Length: 336
Ligand SMILES: NC(=O)c1ccc[n+]([C@@H]2O[C@H](COP(=O)([O-])OP(=O)(O)OC[C@H]3O[C@@H](n4cnc5c(N)ncnc54)[C@H](OP(=O)(O)O)[C@@H]3O)[C@@H](O)[C@H]2O)c1
Image (cartoon, rainbow, N blue to C red):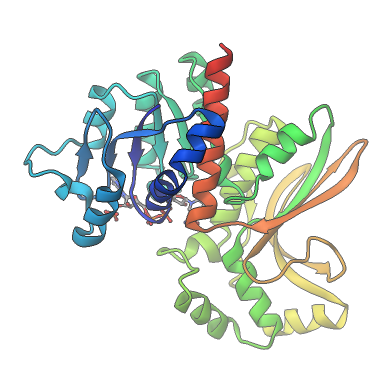
């Protein structure tokens, strides 16, 4: 399978490391031979239509902070040129999520679909702003569009709701979908002020470069949009979410919750309305996870409520979700 990889940051590099370390067993078990023929970061690109040397690619990125120095050539293709000229089967989109115009991911995804490439995205921006139209574009161009890693990182939340609960009618769901705010709220419950808890989260590298994505609930809202479209067949985008972040949560709110054997959590819920807001939940509720963990509870008509808990982020975890999507695509291709 010939792959174009957009973005070579934490997730992109983790994916390539996963390919290197698992190449033999992925081939032996699944017959899958991923061949990365083009990759680009914000400074340039590397191309080899017979397949890039992945170990060299990682070394070059580490040494020069860009893949541009992979080959001694001045000829540096842009992402769009790569999509238009390389004969790839799949585009994997791992550039930064942006909820203003979803670029550059939106242009990569739409162009790849128009060029009949299947698409895997861990970038939430394009899905948050245009899920319904991207789905239509994929159907129109008869390509597969997969995005397991956008919700829950490596925890297969979307697959669970869509496939394991097949035939069920999910009536509502609620979840903690942002590990950073959960870490901050957990530390506040352990006695830190909001500012001290935020500083600690920043020191540990948990907070996005634009902290508003975490603190104002935008990351959780983007994941809620993806869940609502994919699981509940709602045709919604970011403006449809009623969103409040955690900036106004005070130490008093946390103390009051603790007195009631509750904890304050940033909950994304779909129960007639789509809401992201801090809420008090019982400490006995399975949803009440601490630290950077994510959790989501699905309530369905006949099988009751089930809660899935797992790490919602991490380079390798998210790379493993991309591998799952790749294997799904390969399986579906070999069926047709
Ligand atoms: N990290 C996680 O745990 C996780 C989990 C789930 C989903 N995600 C999503 O996955 C995506 C990647 O996350 P990450 O942690 O790998 O981010 P990252 O480390 O910041 O990597 C982003 C990559 O995109 C490249 N890039 C940015 N703007 C670009 C542009 N205009 N043209 C070409 N390349 C551009 C960057 O280039 P440079 O290398 O030159 O800076 C970098 O290689 C994000 O959308 C994120 O929301 C991440």
